[in-house]
Amino acid sequence: MVTLRNAGLSLTPRNIDTQSLSLISWNTDGFSSRPVSRASLILDHILEGPKSPDIIFLQEVTPFVRAFLLKDARVRAAFLATDAEDQTGLFEDVPFLTMTLVSSERFADSLHSQKQGQGVQGGEDCMLGRVARVTLPSKYKRDALCVDVVSPTAPGAFFRLINVHLDSLGDTLHYRAQQIEILANVLHEPGCSGGIIAGDFNAISPEDDGLIDKNGLVDA
Image (tube, rainbow, N blue to C red; front, side, top):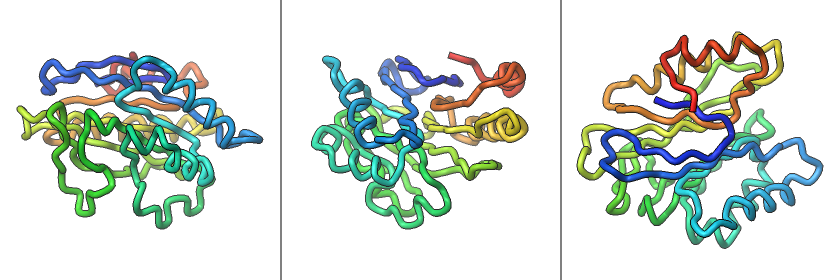
């Protein structure tokens, strides 16, 4: 179990054989004066390398930024997006949310075709399982966006990718403490063999440093 704060990471999860997955996480800044232009530059930066990441975690994605990403030709050609088909109530009472993109080459079927929480088979590397948002106690109505990954050779277990944007500002430490405890428990659910919690932790106080060890997580 590993946590990650806004950085790229190469990982080799347990029970996914010797396969490795690359992950990039980025807060797109929903309060930017030009959020779509900023998101376009961020996407350019992420995809400008010789090889695109397998997984992209985005936070503070506004409705307009989301529409831009879903229409971008590079995203449509190379990635699967969470909540791409059914966006009913997605931005209800919130100005922005998290969004996860996964490589359509590494994960060959659609995330958003899962209507009943059933796993779907992907490509020869990995399979995609359940996709869900876990409601968190929060001043700002934050949640955790979870995507389960299953090895073709170990269908009884899964590896969980969790995209988070924890509560910010000094007066919400008690919320962050509850949120990390819940997320750690999500990684201990039956069948889960480990996972990555990545995104914007808003770890702005000395007390935040102790939350990782307290909940049995390892800071990457």
